[in-house]
Length: 469
Ligand SMILES: Nc1ncnc2c1ncn2[C@@H]1O[C@H](COP(=O)(O)OP(=O)(O)OP(=O)(O)O)[C@@H](O)[C@H]1O
Ligand SMILES: [Mg+2]
Picture 1 (tube, helix red, strand yellow):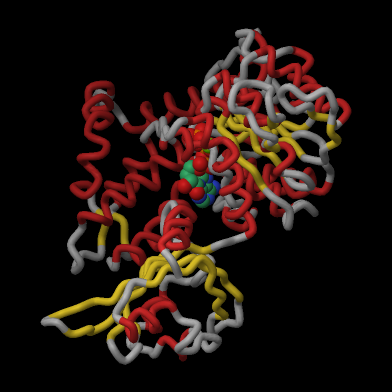
Picture 2: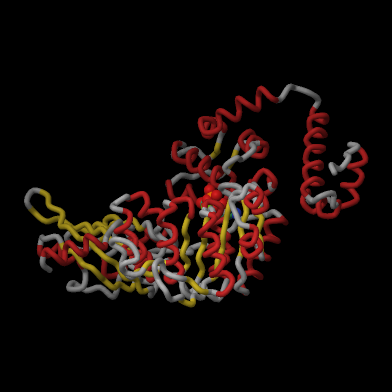
C-alpha cells in the first residue's frame, strides 16, 4: 500500500471502536470492543483471552489478517476493509491499523486499532463528508451531526410502572403506521431511547435512522444539512443530499425541535404535508419517504405558547404524542433501574455489588431526580467506580459526593415530626398533583397513583382536597 492509500485509510478512521493485542504466536492477549456489534456480551470477551486469533475468527488466515501481517513483516499495516466472520457466524467489516510491538529489538506481538464499518456508518460518514466543508474543521459540530445508529429496542426500556408500560404498548402500535410522532419528556427520561425503539419496532427498522439535534447546529446550516444543496447555490456549495434524502425509507429524529428557526419550520411542514423537499438553491423538488420523530423537553403546547413552534407545525407533528413521565413520578421504577444499572456496571467495572443499603434506597426514593434516569445511571456508575472490589453493598458513603447538595437542602427542609403526619402530608401532595395533572379525572388519577378509585375518593374526602379549577 502506498502512502496516499495509508492516508486515505487514516482519513476514514476518524475514530476507533476496538483494540486487540496478540503475542508473536497469534494468541489474543487483550481485546476490548467498544462497539457492541463485535460481541453481544462483555463476558464473551474474557472467554476469548488466551485463544488463538484463528479460533475466534475462523474466517481469518495469515494473509487476510492485518494483525498477523504486521507481526510477520514488522511493519504497520493500514487496511481500508477487512471482512471477518466471528465464532457466532456474524459477518463484520472493519477498517484497521495494525502496528508491530517491539521489545529488546524483537517483535513480540502486534496491536490493532479497528473500527466497524456498518451500513449506517458509511451513511454517517457521508453526512459528515457532505457537511465537513461548511464546518471548517469545527470538530464539536462534526460530532453533533453524526447520525446515531438505532441500537435500542422496546425491550431495553426497563420499567415496572403501569404508565410506562402503556407508553411502550402505544409506541409499539404507533410504530406500525407512518404518522409523525412527538416525544415529550424532561431531560434524561429516555426520549432518544423511545425514538430508537419506535424505529426498530417499525417496518423501517432495516432502513436508516438519522438523529439530528436541532440545537447543535448553527441556524445558517440547518437548512443545508436537512435538505441538501446544489452546486453553486452559495460559494463552495456542492451537489449534496441532506439528511432527509440520506434517511430515505427510514426515520429522521429531530431532537430539540423547538430550537429550529420558525422560517425553517414551514419547510418542514412541506415535507410533512406532501413528502417533498427542495435542496438549497434547487429549482426542482424531490420526493422523500421518511418518517419524522421529533422531541423536546418543553411541552409542545408551551412551545407554541412561547412562539418556538408554529401552530400549524404543532398540529402536524403532534399527531401522536408520547409523554414520558419524569422519574420522580414513577418511583416504582427506581428499584428495577437501580438493579439494572448495578448489574451493568458490575460487569463493566469488575465489581460485585449485590446489595443496596436501606439508607441508600430510602434516599433514592425521596430524591427529586432533576436529571431523571440518566442521573440515576450516573450516580450508580460513579459509586461503583470508586467502590472497593471486596465490597458487596452500596452504601450512602458511596453516593454522598454526587448528591451532597440535595442532602443538605432536604435536611434543612425537613423537621422531625410524627412519621404519620409526614407521610400524610406527602400523600396529600401526591394526590393533589395527580388530580391536577388529570384535570380532576379521579379514575385517571387513581391509575397514576396505582391505587383503587374508591381508595382515592376516600382520601380526597379525608384530606379535603378541592380540585383547582
Ligand atoms: N427506562 C429506561 N431503561 C433503561 N435505560 C434508560 C431508561 N430511560 C433512560 N435510560 C437511559 O438513560 C439515559 C438517558 O436517556 P435518553 O438519552 O434517551 O434521554 P433523553 O430524554 O433523550 O435526554 P435529553 O433530553 O437530555 O436528550 C440513556 O443512557 C438511556 O439508556
Ligand atoms: Mg435526547
